[in-house]
Image (cartoon, rainbow, N blue to C red; front, side, top):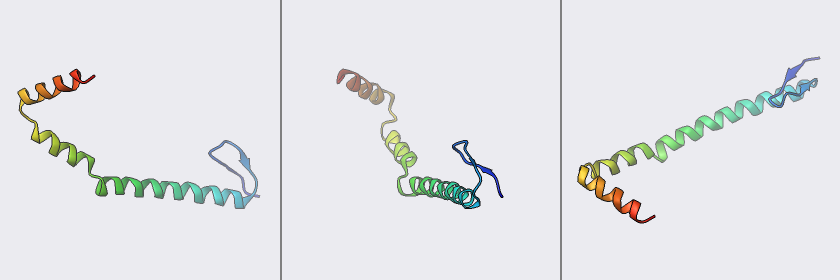
Length: 73
């Protein structure tokens, strides 16, 4: 009989349970990679932040905006 250890630290004796856990782990890795890809391509946060920072690159403007934010607290 096959033995494998799951991520929850239980010893599993059933080969079907081992294969099922391996499938779930592989699928979760695949979903995480897909999520990362979608976040990078469909929601380009870094590019948006760079664009917004370029608009306000004047130090005097940055200081004024900082003061406005601090005054709103």
